[in-house]
Length: 110
Image 1: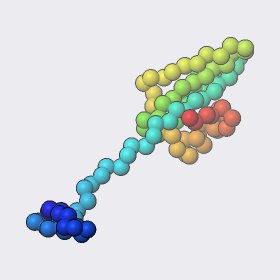
Image 2: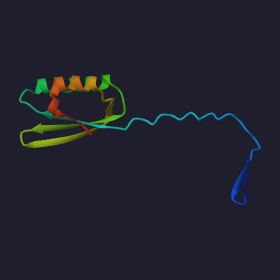
Image 3: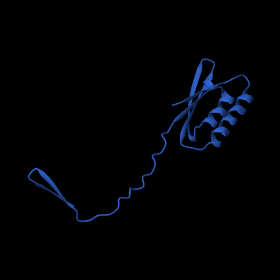
Image 4: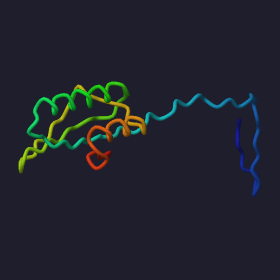
């Protein structure tokens, strides 16, 4: 179309008309979160290893793009671990499973 000014009036001349069809807009991907799991190492190494395997199994059961990190406390020492190959899809069901393994207070989602 064309737009012309004539004095104090605007004139619009239409050259082609077609029905409006909005473009398909892909939904934005969900924001990536970071899940921090705080673990306290105990004197029972075997139980600690079993619990760690259970945590990893739970994380794998909920695939997704959320980053996972571990913070392991040994006495006064804290070791922070990035797990670059481990991602998960954080959700209420995963939270419940992890809370049963490590306690509610040991889970931080950023």
